[in-house]
Length: 320
Image (tube, rainbow, N blue to C red; front, top):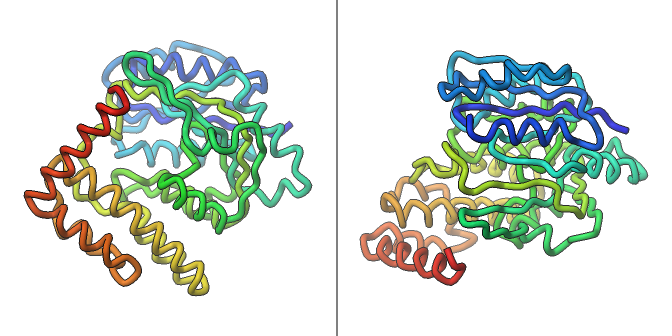
C-alpha cells in the first residue's frame, strides 16, 4: 500500500474540525500522519487539535492567516513524509475507505509512477439535508478512469467545472513541489484549480470511480462565501502559460477553459456587486465573440438585474 500524509488547513473551523480529523483517523488505510496547520484560529479549534494526542496527529500554528489556506497547505506539504499528500479541509469529511480507495485504484495501474493526481467523487450536503453527488462522479460512477492532461481539460470544459475537488484529492508530493505548490500570495480564491492544472501537466490523473468524501455546504467561515467579486480567476495566467507550451489545437482548448472560468466568475460578480469591465479584460473575444458580447451586457445595470433574476430562478427550480 502507498503512504499518505494528510494535510488539514485550519482557520476558525472549530465546530467542524473534530469531524474532519476523526474521519482521517477512522480510515481503513491508516495515513502516515495527519498534519493540521492552523492559521491563528481564535475559536478553540486549534486547542482541540492540541489536546487530542493521537500519535499520528501532528500540528503547527502559523502567526499570519493566509487567504484560502494556501500557505497552510504548503507548510503541510513541506512537513509531509509520505509519497502522497491527501488534502482534507477542516469542514469536510472522508468516508472510512477514502484513502484505501485511492491506493487500490493506483495499485491496479500498469505504470503507477505516471500518475500525479488521484481523486474520488464527493457528495455535497446542503442546509436542510439535501444531498447531491458531483456531476463528474455521477457520469463515471463505478469506473476507474485514467486521464492525461488534454483529457482533463476536455472533461473540465464538458462539466464546466474541475473534476478534481480538494477534499477528495491526493497528489504525489514530488509533483506538488515541482509544480510550485499552492499559489500563496498570488491569489485569494481559485488557487486549488490553479494547482491541479500545474500538477496535472506533469503526469496523469486517476479517478477512482467512487464517492468517498462529503462537502458540507453549510459550514462556518467558508472561503466560497467570502466576497471576491470582480477578481480575475487565479488560473488565468497559468492557462495562458500552458497554452504557450502547446500547439494551436490544444492551446485553443486552454483558451476556451480560461474563458469559461472568467465567465463563471463574472456571473457571480454580476449578481452580487455588479460586474466591472476590468475583471473581464482577459477574456479571449477572438475565440468567443458572443461570450464577450454577453459579458459586456452583464457589466451594465440591466445585465446585473438579469443575472440576479436567473440566479433566483435556478435556486427555486433546485428547491433551495
